[in-house]
Length: 249
Ligand SMILES: [Zn+2]
Image 1 (tube, rainbow, N blue to C red):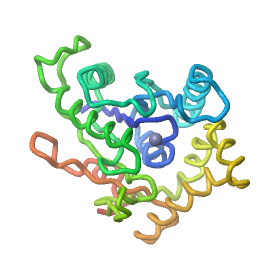
Image 2: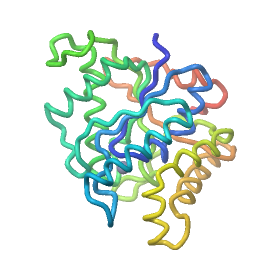
Image 3: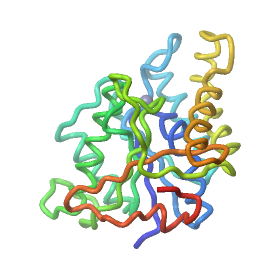
């Protein structure tokens, strides 16, 4: 098994909110880390043009990734227009065949924003499709289906306000500073929120939610995950196997 993990989400900063602590732990365990976004975050602004904010946010994402020696990729779709279609599935599957992840982390299938839910579906299919010989994907060869985990949705709830309970919580207490530093790299988003709330709500909301997940396993900070255990997907709890006592099922 290649020690390669891919955290793949809709927008720059999604990974930093939901799984940066776990990615940092995997890095320390000797894994190569890739962070990808389907879109460049081109709608996340009240002041810049689409071109300018896309450029800024990709640099911010790269800077955040660099803190855990991760490689950042953008698939160049658009915010709000992430569709489950041929183009997105083929492009995502191409990325999988290029970097060959054994473990994939992505958005919750139930979340507050459709971009996140679409990304979750596209990634689920790319995991499966990377193992299918006759895909219209001409990068590399076909690869085994990777282990797939869904992060918590934003604030841990679905669109009806129901709490989504994770099946595994990772103790990220030792990584909270790195996670905070990674999120702080997204300067444009932090400033945008700061001007609305008059306080550093960007960082505070991440810490509040990580603290809530940590409390559930009696540690300082945590990140929650649910493993995809459908037919054809590997069934072992690989996160637990790699990170040991830091993971509470
Ligand atoms: Zn997002």
